[in-house]
Length: 239
Image (tube, rainbow, N blue to C red; front, top):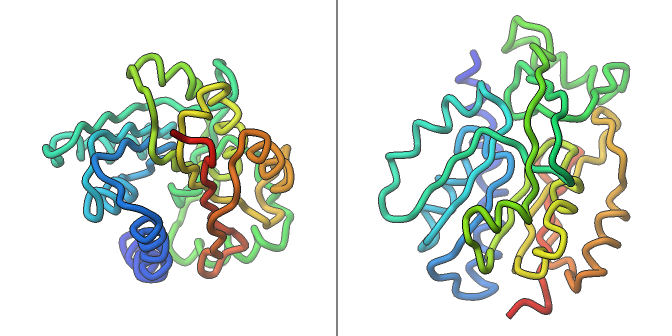
């Protein structure tokens, strides 16, 4: 049943992801690009960008040990670019936080879930058809690093695309770039507008923060059947 759900989500999201890829293809010629993928899940973004672009390096981060066990199987599948896979999370500072593993693995998060929200109740009814376990399967302490430290560790000069899908933790990841944010050309992230995920920020906060570093919104697109939008911001000072 889990496989059926993943297959359904793949078809639902196919045209949506095509619009993302078309944006990057039309915007400019991206050649030998470097990508940081935060919240890599089971490698969906790896497949998507490896299929459509000439990659030089892709550095992936996945907090969930469950997801990482599947993600790491891709390590030797791609030999035409440098693929790094890390079982750590990225945030605004180095520390440890409780991470909540959910039955539908792509929704695992550092954020607390309001299980009394209408959105959660509707989502749970659908998931109950595919999963027999409770929504939050377990929680564990996870190590967090910051993007600016990862720039140093991997000796990065510039990053073409920073992609973030961390279920309500996106702003924390962005703030962890600190002064290295000026060395990132595009930031591609999602923002949840539902009341299910309890965040400590609003979209306005993210937009204001990025504007301070000369980033402007280049694309806004709603994800199918979700109260979630994906955004792409471009660094106008990137050289």
